[in-house]
Length: 95
Image 1: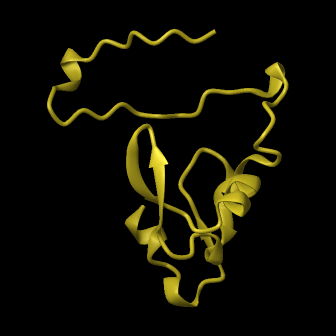
Image 2: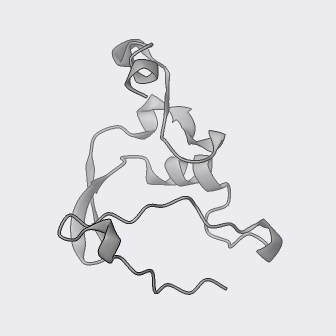
Image 3: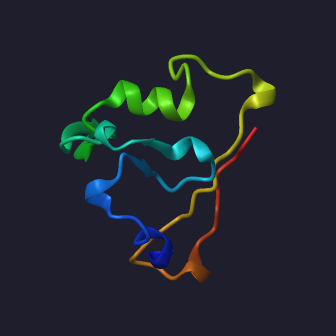
């Protein structure tokens, strides 16, 4: 991954890629802009500067749920630095 990431000079690049499981993660570098404080689940974190352009690039009309037959679960991983993965038991329920 590091080898691929360093093939292009970031400072000269017009486009960047957000690592996801879809090609929609390729967008103009200017979308990220300056880190911008946003609230997320009660915590202030740094997000992208051009939120609407970012979400539109990734999801199209991000204010509406896609039809049920187009919805999918993304490939997320669970990370817990305090416990071994052997101790993790997934209790989530997906419908």
